[in-house]
Structures are given as structure tokens and as C-alpha cells.
Length: 225
View 1: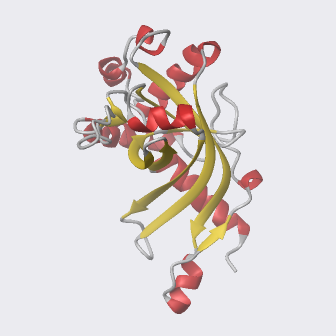
View 2 (view 1 turned 90 degrees about the horizontal axis):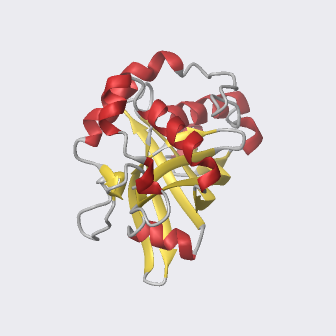
């Protein structure tokens, strides 16, 4: 049985470093999966991204806010990979939170101010009849790959992690324990910038290409896009 502190450490590392998730939604036209670029939210645990309103996953969230997803990383010590699965409820960010959460998104995604300025979109695009929205999900259940069991029997299984064990971390208001995130921001900035050059969550869900449009929302958004 994997000790809880180890599950917490693995979860925190994935949440803070993966930065791209596979977001599964469903709606009137069936199920859909999109690759979106997120930044983490804590207390409660959540993920934040932006996408085009017309993107299929965005339309699905409007119709059915219950979602699921996964994040993973490769090239890690030991087994070489790690991953998490989750269920959640997603919704558009309302006007009351737009200024604060959009600033958090850009600061976490692009720590370098000059790079951030190149990627930042006018907030009018996220208001009223604008083509984009920021979206946030609140995690309801969280599982990790059960690596210890896999090493015993090679069966792919998951192990549940209590949410109260993974809520701490950097928060929008500057609180949290940090979880060692700050020292990694420069590398993240480079990695995100490289990925964004072909992935912008812009999700126009032009159903065939997208969902790596920045998912950035594959919808031209920059987020789950």
C-alpha cells in the first residue's frame, strides 16, 4: 500500500508540472476529448484554462458540466511515467472572477513578463459576446496510477487519493505552501511557450484538427482549449 505522503507528493508534482490535460466531456452530439493547457487552482483543487465558446468541449460543458480527465508526465525517474485521473464539475468563469483568474492564468503559464505580454489576449474577448471564455473545473475525485501494484503484477490499476491531501499549494491570493513551485517556473515558461507554438487551445473544435490549438483550448483560446 503506497503511503499517503507519497501519493500527495506525486499528485502535487503532476498538478504543478504537467500543464496539459485530456478533458473528456459529453453533450448532445456524444462524447468528446480535448487536450487543453491548464494552470492549477487550489483550495479547492481545480484546473483553469480558456477556450473558444464554439469549441465542442465548451459547448458540452454548457450542456453537461460533469467532466472527467487525465494528466500524465513521462521521462520521470523510476518507472519513467506517472499519471492521474479525475472527475470534476466545470463551468465558465464569471465576470466577477475574470480579472483575477485571467491574471493568475497568464502569470502561472508565462512567468516571464515579456513572453506573457506576447500571449495575453484582450479581456473583451472573454466578456459578453466575445468569442472566448475562461473555464474552471473543481475536482471531485482523484486517482493515481498504482505504481507499487504494477511492479508486482503488471496490472494497470488506480489508487484513490483523498482530496484533502492535495488541496495545499500556490493560490490566487498568494497563499498556500508553495510546494516548491517557484523554482520551476522558468523551465515551465519555456516548455509552455514551445508547446503553444502549435497547440493553442483554440479549439475551434473544428473537430478535426484542433484540440491542440492551444487548447489553449483548441479553440483559439489558450486553454483547454
